[in-house]
Image (cartoon, rainbow, N blue to C red; front, side):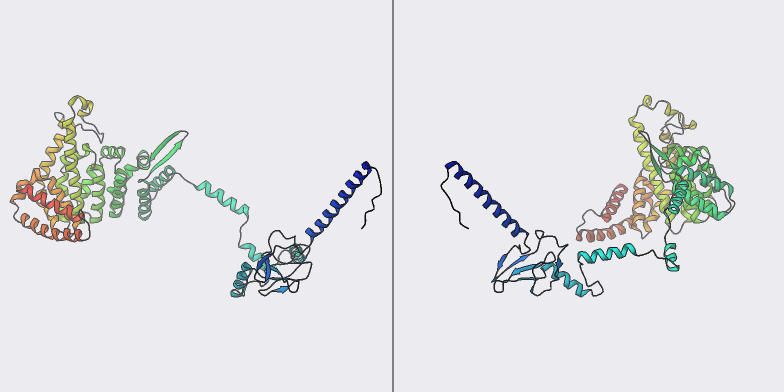
Length: 487
């Protein structure tokens, strides 16, 4: 193209130059836009003699283009063909053609498909194929017939599910409601098997203390106290007098669980004569299983309840336990009795120390005695002294009358380390009462010497394993302490 410039005025010449510049700028924009729309716009990365690129997001949409399906070998693609995303594309400088093959991720997927031939061989479809498949899905009619009905029967409608959930919500019961229902059933039924099952469920419930929140106040609901408030304790005490040993066993079990560390239930049990009923079970001919449960209930009633302990001693409770101790040859009841005896002695010593530290003025009205389990007052027959002084004298007299100074050392003959430990602990607690009898006991020093030699070897074995303060060391220390006190 030639530009002919004639002689024109300077102003007109400047105008013509401006128009020419605008024409050139527009021509450049048209050419550049055409280049950007070209399907051959690739990112080229030099590798060896050829240039290679990976197809990414910068390529044009494949929806309206013919999609070329590459393999793991280089293949020539025609102009206008699209390739799947992730493929490797290169420009062959010798032929001037574009070539494509599968990318690394695609090759790994191809290997996995070869390992799983049962999966569909075709991994992707063109836009037209996808549209066709979607159209077929819309046009497909719902299943019908017996097969369809059979599949429908496997599932339930949302209405049925809502009805079931509503029924479940109506059947939810609180512990209070469950205890009330069980006690009503216990009153109505005459079947022994049903009564046993009801008592078993009650035993599980009375262990629990349920925390409830009412507005900003947090309340604790004790199921054992709930049982008492509904008259359940009277039913349990009545079960102790049943002619069926199984009902006696189960009633004592529930009673012991309700009494454990529960002052309110302990007080009511004492008021309703629970202590006398339990001593009767222990002092008469009963199966060993019944006596075990009765002993459990008795221990739950006496622990941390000085008033009950005082009445237990005054009613000859230690003599009753000594008879049960002699009857048991297996030892399982013996160790429970000795454990209870140890607890009574240690609690009596603790109460004596507290009473010594407190002045009479601080005791106040409690010195007259009450049914408060934590009261240090005395019953009427001990009005001149504290309950601890009365119980201390009764406890010492009961230990001597029941010959416990010679009964407890029998646990040392057991092969069980736990039984020996409890026997030694109780013997040490009884030293103020039994020291003279220990010294006169001919076989006791020999038994202690034999046990010391045995536990020295066990301690050496513990130390070899790196345990310098193990369980056997504690038993050996008890033996040393008892031997020193006997000298």
